[in-house]
Amino acid sequence: MTSRPAIGALLPRNFASGVFAAGMLIVSASASAASNLLGAQGLGFISPQQSATWTAQTKAAAGSIVNIQPFREAEALRAYRSASDANLVASTIPMTQDQRAALTARVATLIRKNAKALTLAPVGEAKALIWSSLSARHEDDGSAILEVMVVVSDYAEADAKTRAGIPVIPALAKAVIWCSSARKMLAWDAVADGDAVSFAKVQPEVDRLYEAATQNLLLAL
Image (cartoon, rainbow, N blue to C red; front, side, top):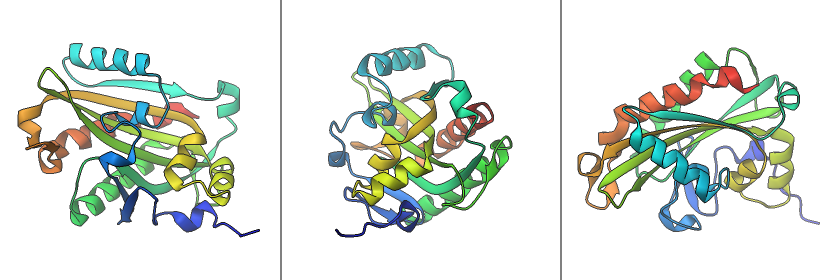
């Protein structure tokens, strides 16, 4: 039987549907089952109906909205007192290498700032892995929905899945124990270059959404 690598050896590395660079995974639109899904739905964390509800709430809000989604009972979540920063952002928004590196560094700073209830430890020594996703969708009404999601996954479960040959992002998604999703509606024409969202144009909003989503790490475990 062929030995498969542990997840710690794959962070950050090659992924079947994308390319890791500077701790960032860029997932092409064709990599997802439906290219117009935001991360929370595309990764299977919420149903289409729940995603539609969140989108309606986002469009009705003056600012951003944040939703917390636990996947374990409160008592079970309290068992995860140590976590590792997986140094991984899955993004469907194109970025330069410098933009990817800078975003990864900002996310790592926010995790250290807002995970005060946790003991941060190296990968392999902690019970959980913290990672995130960044996605955007062009709506029929001419708006854009931007979503940042901060995710906590069970390390042992994700590790077992990568050793079984499952790629990193699906393995982490299948091992999710908690996530915080922050969404904001923007004008498409203000944030896009042609058919794609411009990261340079949405970066200030991305930073604010990451701040909102990571603040909930204090409530995670």
